[in-house]
Image 1 (cartoon, rainbow, N blue to C red):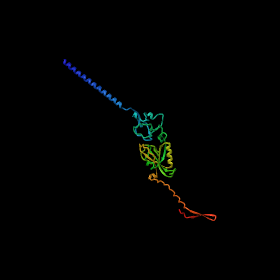
Image 2 (spheres, helix red, strand yellow):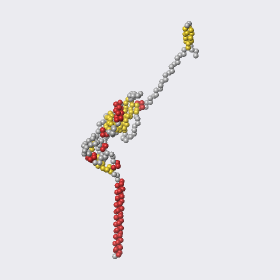
Image 3 (cartoon, rainbow, N blue to C red):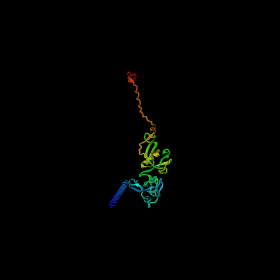
Image 4 (cartoon, helix red, strand yellow):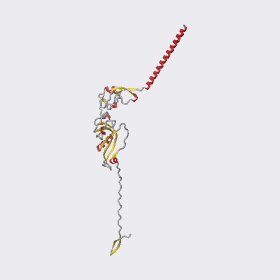
Length: 289
């Protein structure tokens, strides 16, 4: 009987130890899982909900509630001008459609800078920076980069004309007068998404009032040609001026002042004086020296 009791006691003790071991392992697993969750939580980046467009939108298209959807965006890198609700994007107290000012791709956050106010228009005036003006320049296929200009490009402006002042009056020169002007319109369009080439008759640039005055004077006194600036090119062009002599490498010879010859010496005249009656007369004779 005692042997049976001892056997049962040992079995019970073993089962109890095994149960303690299993419970301890379960708690260790729970602690490890909790630690992992805490580590993942520390690595997670805070996000906020904003509205984004659900499809690609081009310049001039109307933005409707069906074109937007909420997305999660990293709060730290949230752009300025985002919208978080439909009520903010389409306020009930302001009627009129919102139009797209700049092309947007699908899942791109809606920015107030890329759309008009409710009821606003998508004209060139909405694309001008503070204090800037729009000025139209007449171009041809040659002076307008063969029609490959489109709104948003930057151009340098060259003037070709004849000088009307100074010692070089009448001489024709070509000079760089403005650099890095942004195009806000080509003919009657300001759509940045237009990709096909179009030979324009006019382009509209964004310029300061002083630059507008320079361009107006240049356009009235000569011809203007545009040179397309590469995308992302931040280099500053220096002073550029070319005339026919510098183009062909002609060096103007310095004029040597002509020295007038010395006047010939007057011939020497030798005379003698002699008296003839009451008069004294000078008679030429050969000079002996």
